Picture: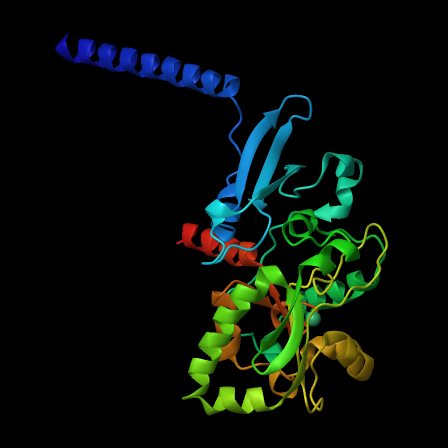
Length: 321
Ligand SMILES: [Zn+2]
């Protein structure tokens, strides 16, 4: 008898828990949807900007209002004293596009793309057939018209990159590692941090010293007219720089390599490619830049300021551990 009533109570408890759990589920359905978690990545990457999410019943999507200082924040110009500017994007699954672009949202991919922060390149001699195919496809896609690409509206807003006229009002002519280069005023500070660390390392590293002495010049800002829906090089936004070596006797860019070696361009051994030492690449990455040598269609001379991609990598990879 005792056993029977214990069983009955357990059963009853089980049913009650199940009912409450169900009710909880119902509750969740009725509450506001949860704002996109990725906003935390943007907030970390751009600490002086704010990203505010408001749900739009009409669009059934989040509207993201981005507010950032009008001029770069520095010790002389703290965020608190700076005027601010604002824009509102549709979240659109991470694309961050203006409402007017919703009709052609399929042209855009999310802002946050995979970038393999840290570590070294895999030797092409160990590529699997699937990897070779991935490189081949990336090469073919780059030549196709209307291929979707990562949305650039956020960077256009942040760095005034939407037109030649506006970006040219925000350029700075600086000296970087002994070379004159024109860049966006928003990356002057990040580049100064990179330079300081590289110069410090140069004192004790012959690898870095030899690399720096082999640089002929640097290319930064370069506006190129493009069609309406086309990926713009971030040289147009002036947040990218290229190291141009004195001797161009090694493969440096996938396209030029393909012109010479044909369809096996991706299998070019790393030692036959010109590339900066990892010490340099690591410093750039730690200061918020990505290196073009890690792209499928590699561009080994190229660095660009993408703190959101570095932060994206860090957050997605620490969660998995
Ligand atoms: Zn470049």
